[in-house]
Image 1 (cartoon, rainbow, N blue to C red):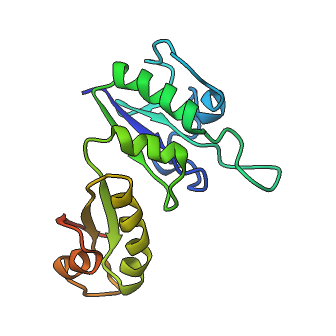
Image 2: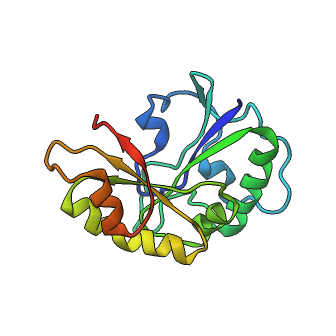
Length: 172
């Protein structure tokens, strides 16, 4: 499957950095942030690592306010329409606070997974986001991230959020 990892978190530091692709050439959000309307085929334009295409946010800003190249609702809609044609699977990393651009992603999402650390703080921090996701019409499921700091069961995490449990992943 042709897969795109879509970075939607302007304060996340850049998903390309997370996967070691920060030096690989290709388009990132600053190039597409003002996009609107119908885009042509973007296949082959993004950085690629191990067969995975990436569309990453910028990592720095010289002024206060929004980071450079942060997409709005119109640019997100244009990019999503294009990548839905060129890719079989799009995995979007959303920020903790929803905005119009992330709502556009949620409107098109087949599945929404809320990753939650198995800690009291993790559950408390995720409660509002879970509620906000449900308000958008999404039906999120909980993927619990194992924590060395706490022994909260995955069932208790999901119950605390009032959302169905998908499963549990190890801590890295």
